[in-house]
Length: 347
Image 1: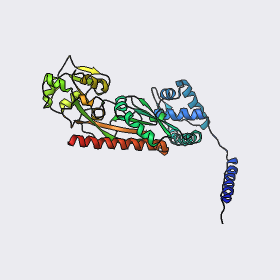
Image 2: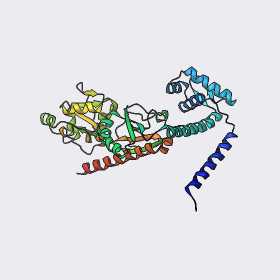
Image 3: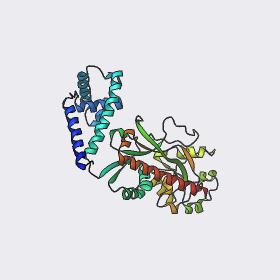
Image 4: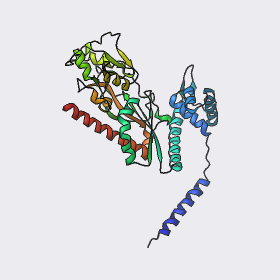
């Protein structure tokens, strides 16, 4: 009969065996700072950007790279006038170092964390306010040991620097085909696509919205042509939205000195509620907008842009259960919204 004590002694013997093997290993490791400087420089192909990420000067990064090259006995980079390129040896070393640093990072997180996890989610500002934040409590209730901290930006995200675990952006994925005649999305999701996990969330559908009172004052909107008698409200992050939407209907946006421009969609929506004109906004924002009852969408089907909303994360980060759970929940919520939007459009 096998006793619990037997398992303890087997485990202890196994640990002792590993300890003895490790005692005879001779680790030859370069300085960790030099490795981090090399990994960041290779990822960005820039000493300056690596310095910004690691809070070091460009000169300090360059010195760490020279130290590492001296340790290894060969060059890792070719220094050109305005850029750097990796040597063949540098490329091979980069792949191994990046893998090793990822393993160390994950092992460290597991070693130091308690049952409470904190994840950082980088989301577009208005999407965070009107779609994500009202739902986030549901995730917290389901996973009480995971805290999600939100940061908001429309700038290209780099999840490799680990400032954010997951990001949600809107735009185009390289290699994906989009309708070239559809409205443009003048935003870059990231400058670094290497090693990314990319998950489609939902389409970017643009919808004109207007106050019913303004329609009573100006006149009915039965066809796209009718919009030309209205003041059009623009949003800075989608500067081509009205131009492209009208062009898809064979119309040209009038040169209107009285057109309104706002920095964010929530400002454009408020202006539409105040009867100042017709705003054009993404369907996902309009459908979750708290003032939606005070606006109407003359063309509820909307028009799909040449791009979509995507979830971005490091491929290696999906080994982390907490990150994987948050990714799964976000895709579930996105699928739920798409289903509701389809049902609303078909009514």
